[in-house]
Length: 280
Image 1 (cartoon, rainbow, N blue to C red):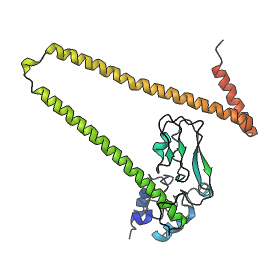
Image 2 (cartoon, helix red, strand yellow):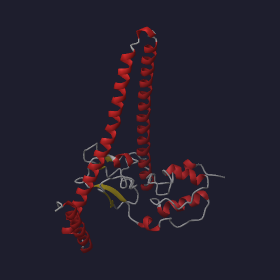
Image 3 (cartoon, rainbow, N blue to C red):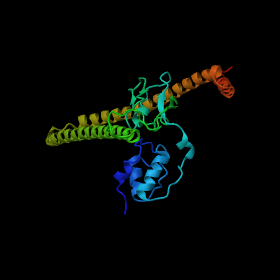
Image 4 (cartoon, one colour):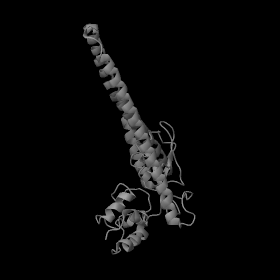
């Protein structure tokens, strides 16, 4: 007899980290319920979750699929605010809304709400996010949304799950509003077209229609160029920010790094100097 996926989901840490290969804790629980996934894929849950899943699903206990990662201490994200360019990529990636910031403004992590999922690291174009180890066995550290009688593990999972559900609901609400606006725009456009079509043929000025069509075509050509220019400009700005971040890291490592880091930094700076020296 299969176990309900929601029952399985209650045993997972709700970090939504996707390290199990699924798009979150519930999809992993659904795969387990169908017998399509192994019980040892939840890295944040470690052996505790493996043993609970084995007992619930009547399966043999397995070692963690990623033993090295499972042995590492819990860690939360930290943004180097001196290198952050305000691109909002990490904000969009965070499954629990634990990052504050806005476009072209410095971002910062709400440390007590970070679930340690690491999903914000990869999309950062300037590599300014690192994971900092903490003493807690379960993340997030906040517990205010949990039942006071819950132990540390399930209190943390409840906190993360509620935050994830709130974020999901917010995104769905914004998507619904966007769809409503598009629908209203289509209705308005249809009404205008219908009104225009009721005019008699004798009132139509052919020359004016041709001029209007030509003007519209020219406008559309110009509009098509704008996104290309914006895309090119954005890529140039990101490349410039990445180069500046690399230079700052190299200078830091040159003065304070290990011997290997100093050697690597010196090599990088020499190459940087060659690339920026004026051609003779």
